[in-house]
Structures are given as C-alpha cells and as structure tokens.
Amino acid sequence: MWSTIDNSLARTFRFSDFRTAFAFLTEVAAEAERLDHHPWLSNEYNVVEFRLQTHDAGNTVTARDHRLAAAIDAVAERYA
Image 1 (cartoon, rainbow, N blue to C red):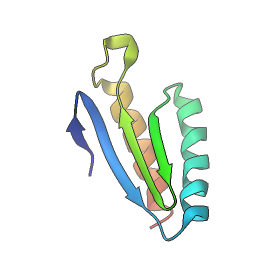
Image 2 (cartoon, rainbow, N blue to C red):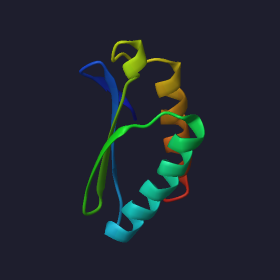
Image 3 (cartoon, rainbow, N blue to C red):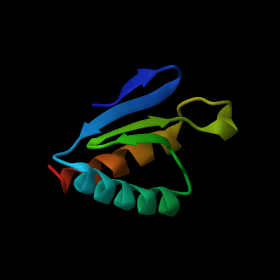
Image 4 (spheres, rainbow, N blue to C red):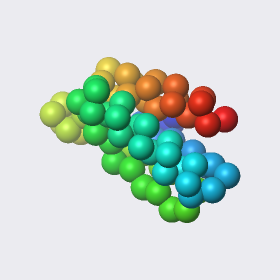
C-alpha cells in the first residue's frame, strides 16, 4: 500500500533478488516516460523504494502521482 510521507506518496517493494527488482524498475521507467512523470526511487539489492510528488505543483501529491502509483502497482502485480 502507498502511504503519505513528507508530502509524497511512498511505497517499498521487495523482490526475490536483484535481477527481478531491476526488471521491475525497467518496466516502471517505461511507464514513467509514457506518463511523463518521473519518480524519486532507490534500489538496494532486492528492495525498491519510491517517493512520488509533483514538483510543478509545489512538491505536493497530485492526480499525476496517483496515476503513476497505479501504473507502478500494475507492473508490480506481474512480479507477484
């Protein structure tokens, strides 16, 4: 589940290994490009963290962030 932390949507995903985490990130990158909305992210081994906020709207959470979060969740479902 996504949570609100420091005026952003936040979520952490855990995968079985680095290769799977990186494949997930590759798909998320394509979605971010398609939506023209790019997240802050962190990847360490099998853990991927996201923080979503819209900089153009004063670093707040907007509908763009919710759309990207939904797209990230859809990608994650393929790795469950």
